[in-house]
Every structure is written in C-alpha cells, then in structure tokens.
Image (cartoon, rainbow, N blue to C red; front, side):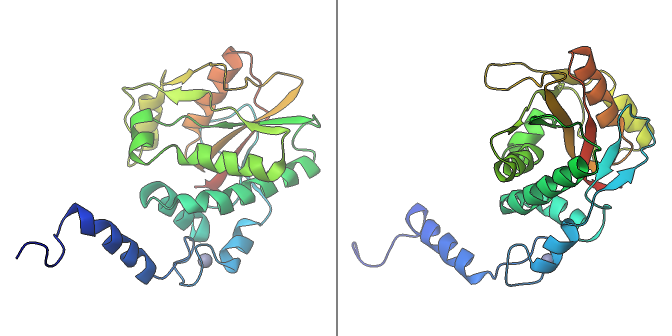
Length: 235
Ligand SMILES: [Zn+2]
C-alpha cells in the first residue's frame, strides 16, 4: 500500500498543531474572557496610576507598583511567566511605560533626558526554560513605546546556585538571596550613568523587597544610582 495515505509522524504534526491553534479562541491573559489576547477592561485596570509600596525589607529608594498582586495584574504575570504568554509582554510594557510617564509627571523621577530600565535579576536557567526573561521582554516593550532615549540595561543576574524563590518564605527568600545578585558588563548593555540617566529597577512582583534591596545595593557598589523601583504588581 505504498504511496497511499500520509505517514503519521513528523510530517503531519506540524499542520495539525497549526490547525489546533486556529480552533482555540483567543483568551484574555488578564481575565480569561475570549475574543482578544488582552481585553479593554484589563488594559484599563493596568493603566491605573502607580501605587507606592512599603516593602518589609527597607529600600533606599521609593518602590512603586502598577497595581496590587490580584486580578489582571496577577493573572497577566502568571500567564506570561508560567504559561508562555509572550504576547502579554507588549500590553504589560505599555502599562509600564504609562507608569513611568506618570512617575515623571509627579516629579518622582529626576528630570533627565535619558532613562535606563534595569530588569531585576533572573536565574539564567529558569529564564531559558521560560523562553527568555519575561521582565526584560516587558522592559523592552516599554522602551519601544517610550522612544529612543529609553533603553534597557539588562546588567543583573542571579548566581547559579540561587534557588528559584517561588514558594519560599520571607526569611528563606532573604537567605536565598544574600550575595546572590551580580552585575554583568558587556559592550551591548549600556551602563546607566549617574547624573545623566534616570535608572529604574523593574521587576514583575515585589513581595518582601529582598531582591530589590540587594539589586539596588549591588548597583550602588558599581556606581549606578537607582532612582526608583517599579514593579508590575506589589504583593
Ligand atoms: Zn481581560
């Protein structure tokens, strides 16, 4: 029966996968409603003004969040990080851009011509498994929305032995993080210049503030003055 029918295997799974994609309705990454990958209601919730946070671990700069860790903020972060919804980097980046403009308008950020967004460190292995660091992707989308004077400085990494912090208590997180953030320099990553650039540390969630505190300290030791911390959601 050679030549009749199509062999089942590598030649057929690709078109089948494409067909499956077509049949699955687009679901909003914030509320799960069908129709659009990010609905107007969730976009409006994310475009609210930033809220000031009071982290348990004290920070030398003010920490802000686009909102609390619930509703569309929480769902979007989980969808982006855990369910591979890379398409959500753009609406989140847009919301981040809006938050940065608001903070600047409130004079909570210094009035300098250039802005550097520094993504909080991610464990490299974890980032690779998730298809690249989602926070860096959100920062890049925000920079695209804000123009050429805004760039992403992905200069922080966590050391290889650090455990992923998901599921750890506040004390465990601090212990897990101590000495875990390091600075990387290479020609492609612009180092923020004190007095010339506004430097904002960006993360998806701020829980205890331990990651942010250590990141700000590591940056300060390298001569980078962080002007503010801005996260998508504050716990
Ligand atoms: Zn929605």
